[in-house]
Picture 1 (cartoon, rainbow, N blue to C red):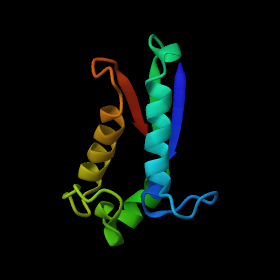
Picture 2 (cartoon, rainbow, N blue to C red):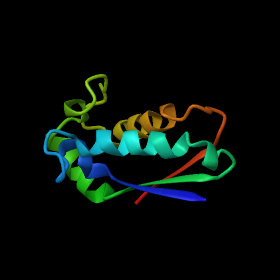
Picture 3 (spheres, helix red, strand yellow):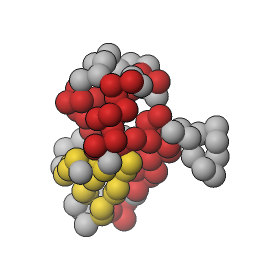
Picture 4 (cartoon, helix red, strand yellow):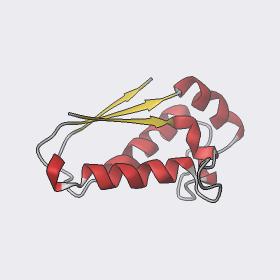
Length: 104
């Protein structure tokens, strides 16, 4: 199995290594490179979106659209989590493959 862990609060944070890059965008790019690697074609994927408590606080004051202009759900935590889950799933070339997602 591949376990991929992402900081939900990263949608409004920059990379330490590259201050020009958003943490969530970097996570999506890294996820895509792993999820679409032929080596993991038959490997189960688990996505853990962590720091949900911080995300719930942040989404009230900083809209997810700062990172994703197409997001229109406002401060609705469920809408935001669904949107992010779909963003990760959409990066998978094999859309029939199951992505197991947990919010922690």
